[in-house]
Image (cartoon, rainbow over all chains, first blue to last red; front, side):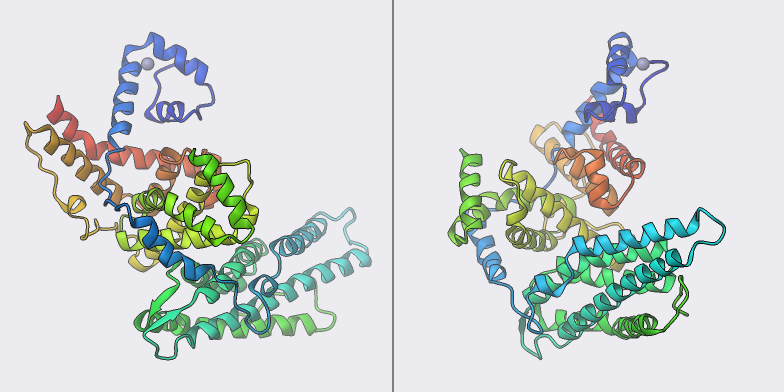
Length: 255
Length: 192
Ligand SMILES: [Zn+2]
């Protein structure tokens, strides 16, 4: 190894992730300066273990269980479906997205200047399947948003464990569709999915028991910036796109 | 043996034995809380993370590979829950550094800069400094650091969890360590 080891090298070496660890060790044997730097780093890393963390008593586990147990109840049905039936399985969504991009690649680099009509036709079909899947996803998300904004009805404590589970199930596909929309240059679709994703994360990772005020805040979040409205409009635009006959292969939603 | 207890309880819990899952919750709560607090720096948020992590883990129990360590698997779920909480906060607070939790006086106490003959006071000082330095890291830096340093996840695994490429993940960890070492500097001077 030429030259001294940087702080980054020493840190990676400590975590076992330095590419040429053997050369680094050899250098450390020969170089007092780097050796001292390593000592200092390890000393500081050890000091970082001394974090001020509030203590929890022996009965803490029982207290946590009391809060966790109500959330383990079997999933509630919404619109006659369990959460699992509700969102499309992630593997199926991934297959649709993959098929879409495989189609795009053949379109970008066709073997001949004008691809034969059956390739264009196949691509239109792929695109349409994706449009249907995203439209369906938005419609389901809309149903959950409506459900959430009506949650509680003025009750003091509201349990949204079921809505959380639907949100979590929708989240994985939402991420996938958002990334797809970004890559496909569908900026408007990507932006709505991005707003939707933030809300889904917030619901899925927040507490299951909400106070009336927290429900009101959530409702405001759903209404603010017109998220519910945007999801509804985009959903119906995509359904319109899906019905339009002889649509070209790369239609964009007009913003 | 705790790991053997875990394996038996996971099998029973998968079969619908709620009592077995209660034992897992009771056994792991304190450690999950420590991890959640280390990442969120708020008792309130840490409690939410603990609760959500156990509910999520229960729903995903069928995906747990029985050969692996339940504690490690659970901690990964908790770290992801904590990161989700940090991300939504970041959106709310517009990148403002998280303030130390007022409910935790030790984190709030300003570290004394003068030399102290009392070793106990000195270690309390280090703890307060570390707590303040941790609070000032960005959510990404703190998450990446805790995942690497406390949980022993590889840089690649952390990148997957946080949605970053390898180089961005490395730099988040480097920045975190750099900032925290700077925060520790006066302590080392006092000690020498
Ligand atoms: Zn050297």
